[in-house]
Length: 402
View 1: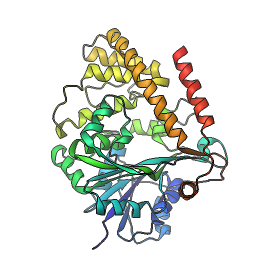
View 2 (view 1 turned 45 degrees about the vertical axis):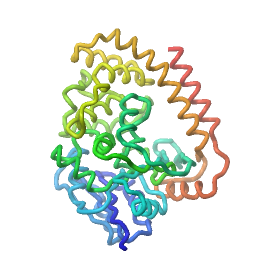
View 3 (view 1 turned 90 degrees about the vertical axis):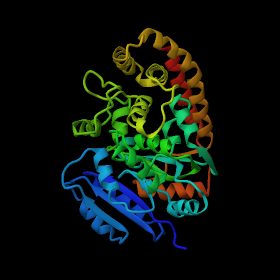
View 4 (view 1 turned 120 degrees about the vertical axis):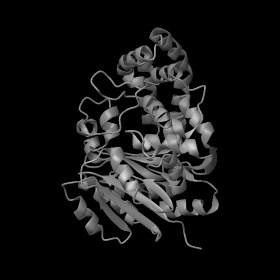
């Protein structure tokens, strides 16, 4: 019996400096029935040269021929997949050694259309301001079968984060048949300007269950190119170029029911992004009476944390558009926060107790980070949790004082 076909897609644009190392984490996978699609969004740097020098017959290089938005590049890349299972990784992300073999084994034994794993995190040196980066490695193992509608409901109530769903990105592997079910109802798979987050909501809307792995299969890289870090970071000296590029593109419009800020920027709230994706994917599921504008506004306000001032301004626009009493919603959000914040803190503390923080290892790129993560998980050392706990708790106390 032939092993399952797995395709790993790396969308990229003008990032040959990090792509080289990301690509190495995939070409080093010892798995023959693997296809690697590098989808070049009309780069003018050495992206094509990086792919050529990788010299791996499993690589397929495709070029958009013109500049596309992030979601449209992802859709373009996905259109080249004909069979099997699919995963996307960013061009500054990577796969742990033996990840593809691990996933293939689950595909052969589990009757599901989606597999999702936890993720390591690697902050590239430029982000840390050092010669080497910081690696964060979750140490838990095991797997569980999750009911997709149940977990989607948890995310919409704010009691779970969207990475707990079957995302197609950084540790998510999806059967192409499930993606076709989405496309048959919406015309395209990616119907939001946030393609990774949208995939979580859309896929959870068309499948019954999925495998969730507590052992990571991927490392999520945070580099100077990262759009998410550029948007959500609270550092004063953050690099705003990636998010500026994102806004300058002819992207898929935000759902009309979720307003933008007055300056045209997106609300800095994952829950707002989740709700936007939920609305964009409404054709994929029956309406849920528990999910509505008022409920989501309360959750968005309750989970704003460091971006509370910005989100409160945005929330007033949202409330005005939907004729919601903002003062009443804000008052209700304080009760939701009293419930959700301890859940979030306890979850982070538990995760930290099962996490290794490698700050002093001379890790220079995502390829080395993936090798190090595999080694750390195979030979765990002392877990550095005290620094994390101190920072987390002090930040929580600061928010309460404010």
